[in-house]
Image 1 (cartoon, rainbow over the protein chains, first blue to last red):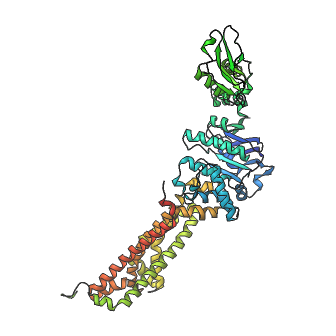
Image 2 (image 1 turned 180 degrees about the horizontal axis):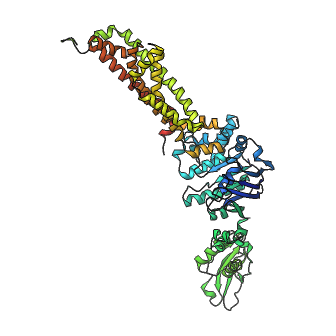
Length: 359
Length: 218
């Protein structure tokens, strides 16, 4: 059931309201390409033209000039109604139809496409499951659901006909931060499974960095920078982007880097049962399978191994490793492989070195 | 009223049951035609107002003026042209339903949450599909509220059409006044009130049946 993504390309797209080129919501010469299956986040302050750009993709707003191509086909040459049925659309207020049950809401586009009723029923069941809702919700009305649940239904409804492109306008903006985080994680998992191309609008840079394979930073209708989140944080194109991503961009970047990208250090290790050479400092005690047991003080081997040390994998985000180091109050974390075998260590110094290098 | 005569002579009612049924039927028919025709015209005007918003002002102004003309005066004005006919009665009755129906249809559709219509358009509903599948169903409670007021008002007004010979329960009231006879007077008054209450209850039930979502809140 994986829907393959389509390439979305903006070519010199401009939208003017009246004669004014700037003005809120206007877009000026926007060009960028979203590779198939990626999430592209449009981010910027309000009035920067991000929502206008999104709505031009399904022609809720008509561009003044330029082309928007989906897999090479210009959307302006398509019939708007047919075009929209082939594009998933999620908005902040969700826009569920209050007079229809959850099942009927999700069935909206398949019904427009005249799928057989049996296929629609099967698809609705599949989607309710996919977005993690109780099957009993099918017969309920939107007013009976919580905000987060309604937002899940909104996503399910947009996914119903397996669109190759999805447009999401601040889809998680109306829920509280805890629910938002969960919905974001769920959506990322869903996206990995389904692989559609997503245009995602937000004003929240943290959300942009978390959700985006690429981030398009917009200001006053123009594209200021189009880059991966890591590039954006490492090398903001100008002062505006630097301010927009925030003074803590170094820390934010740590959330994007895996421990595996840091140089691993060899630890002084000793196997269980082997003699510990006397001297200063600590040595890492490993069991027969090379799994870490704890640190042993060479000067006082009689105290036994101290197990209080953070253990991370190559995939652990550096930000989380740093949090663990600070929480344990130690300078070294043990890096292990998937089976828990010791690969080496990383230190607080390596992380602060990374921060210094990018500042 | 003749002194010593009871307020209600039940034997008179029993002996006139056929007539009671006839007048009730006439009353219902006059009301039914007026509200149906009124609804069709108001609906057309509402569509016009949604398509070309500038037409809403003139439409409410015109129907507003119609609404303010006293019914007896309106019938008097029409009789030279259309005579003592059903048409005269219905022109007046329909005229009175228009303002309330137009306002409630347009108001109901305008009160539909913008996010629902935006989502509908964004997912590929045509404008017509959005109107029929999203806007009108969601406007139903307001539209039916308008229908209730229009129906009750019309049932009241139909009693007046007896004056131009179109029957209905007003016939009994007229009869009672002409003959100083309280039985038909009270019968006519009671039945028109009962009819109004019954029609209103029926519309409430219809709304409940048609809008199940309004009853299920979390």
